[in-house]
Length: 217
Image (cartoon, rainbow, N blue to C red; front, side, top):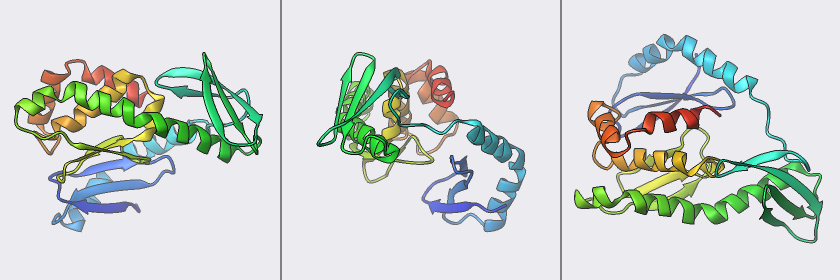
């Protein structure tokens, strides 16, 4: 089975299937390729289930009357012609005006830009609300970077960056807080072993329920 391999300074193997059905494997720098191949082969059935789930999901549409989510709230798109791009929320409506209202790609980009403009404030607030315990442990506040990521919700680099997926702007704040806490816990444990999960249990006892909300859509 073909897969994309990304090596990094990590201790464990991780595999994801993106919306295009591509298998992405992250592996330690020195792990033998035959061990990685075996890891992928053993998870063949799981990979196929993930691909079927992606295939069964309807493609998002960006037309007048369609819907999208913002911080978990369902909004109805009202797309109209206008001299320049403008996005404004009005109750349960998201008004989008732009020169080419029939171009779904442009409507999508307009909404994504709207998310990006607000995401830094939303994400930074979540980080700072949850960082106090880690500050007491001597950690420095990580620097936020916003990204569109196809296979990850967030990541923490050893250089002091916390990367958060802009797609999270579609989810409730409880889910955003979960992803942020997950990455902050990597300040203590750069792995997903028992110590990491024990810290998650300590800092956010209901994290599994929040994780289910993230994976439900």
